[in-house]
Image (cartoon, rainbow, N blue to C red):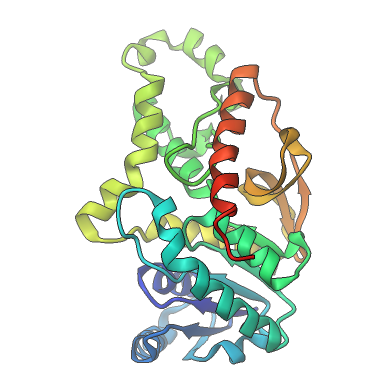
Length: 309
């Protein structure tokens, strides 16, 4: 697979490295507005070629070099403060400009968007590129869902791999947990609680939801960026495309009547294969959960209106 990465910062670097370590891409071009940074990252990553499971070549490149890529990951931008929505003004013009250049270079692959606010920026990429929505995927709440599974697992003293849980809404402050959808192994959360009531004495759902929401900021305050969760999240999407896995995962996609929502990107389970999004799934939410989803969708819609489309 030929991979392009826009943004050579902490996220772009770890996406490239994780792809190499997992043997997904064989040819990776890294781009950054600071050209020296992209060049340095490519040299540094190339120095590890002896140790990757498969050989992979890295180089710095321009937007015009992205035309032959199978996947382009968009992860440029900065985090100014504790609300991802405030990144919109900083990122929207830059993203629109280089997406046009990448498309003009002949790019026919799939965009995977990480730049925040990711649901709004993914919608912008969809509109500016003119691509079918199946070829524009946002990382959305995939990472938040993974974080939730870790938080729940830590509370219950089990493996995160035994937890199936989803965060819905924007990848941001208005996200929420539909608790009706949480499963432990093949059991509902309520069933597991009846089996092990002693584990749920301090199981505060509101606190767990808040801890999940705050987790990214707690990491950012200490080290200035998040890396390992998002690096693996994005590479799960890339791997699903590269290997035509047809795996169901949570990501931001275009709503076309799903949950009564239209013309916005928001997260829900999707099936991903070699051509991108193959199917979108609606969860069977309670009335309260559906109300919360529509509320967070309203936040996204309000910010989509601020795009220069």
